[in-house]
Length: 334
Image (cartoon, rainbow, N blue to C red; front, top):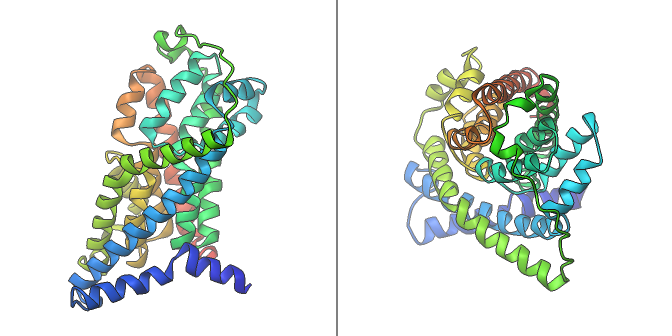
């Protein structure tokens, strides 16, 4: 029990870092962290450093594991299964691909051109930006293990159900012809040495950090403002339990935005400490990561409007249902 508490406080939450940043803000900047300005600077520095440390370590480990599953091998593995089993495997595959929604679409096109059923490819497309091992660890560092694992489970369930529904509705014919006719080159991926895998993992860390760091800065900045400057009463009025449409509002606000999940977590953290319902927060995070406007625009090039509308509708309704469910049973997690 002591070991778990130590890991949670010092490794995940990095309480030692919180103390160091406090000493920095109060000793160097001469600001009290209980003040609005001092608290904002402390929140920003602590969250940015914590997220970048965790992100770098996690992406390195995930990318090393991912080096054993190149696209060619993944296509072959998924091609062996059918029905709900294939949807589950595709959703699980999404958890080890540290991609945002836009980055997932080229793989989605590759899987579709390789002849995989449309339902399987959509299970992957929903899961990949929504759920990954990195988000699990970061969510644990803020909300605890119960919330983190519950988020991953409902994300996987949404991916499996969403892909299965799209398959059942016969949406295959609404994939653009150029995707279906592209074909795929069946090349056996070369076996990498341990050194090559380490280099690949390092390069993935560098590429991922460069890609998401702006969103981390923006997300942490917004979180610092929410945490220290916006009155809790105002946030409660708009997104609190007194507003029965809070989950729907959070989902609709999240859809036009574009950020990696690592950029939304600081905003979620600030909203949580202001008393916003857990389901409302998770709905916002899911909408931003799974249904961002840029990814929808990119996806439109690969699928026809009817399939795009069905995809957005299924995922949006699923996110809203998840949000209200979490709000109703929040007492189980907090």
